[in-house]
Image 1 (cartoon, one colour):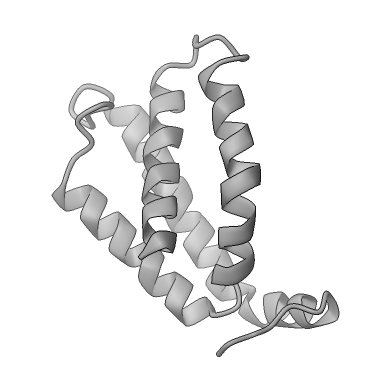
Image 2 (cartoon, helix red, strand yellow; image 1 turned 45 degrees about the horizontal axis):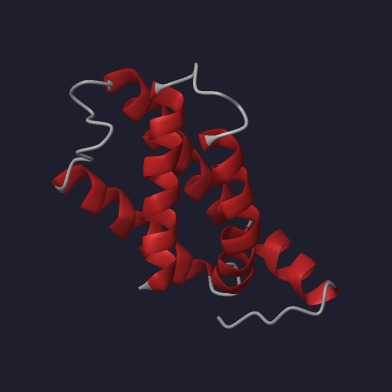
Length: 116
């Protein structure tokens, strides 16, 4: 559940940033970068240990986002930003699946557990 919330938050924050490219770099973009490092890194470290579960999580996030449109950065008001970020997440998911064995090998070499 926490992983799903993290990935949904990331999807929506990326959309917010894409929709508002003129935001001061030292505010929202800097906060997102910091959150990605502090929160995203440990979530990813855990999530990538079970690629099938990560795939299910990302699919669930995309389905939830589609069924419950973002009210802060509405896809109706910012369709290009929404499409671009959703496409990016789909490409990320496809890349993870395509590189599944490489990810497993790299994790093992780095002393990280593979749970699947």
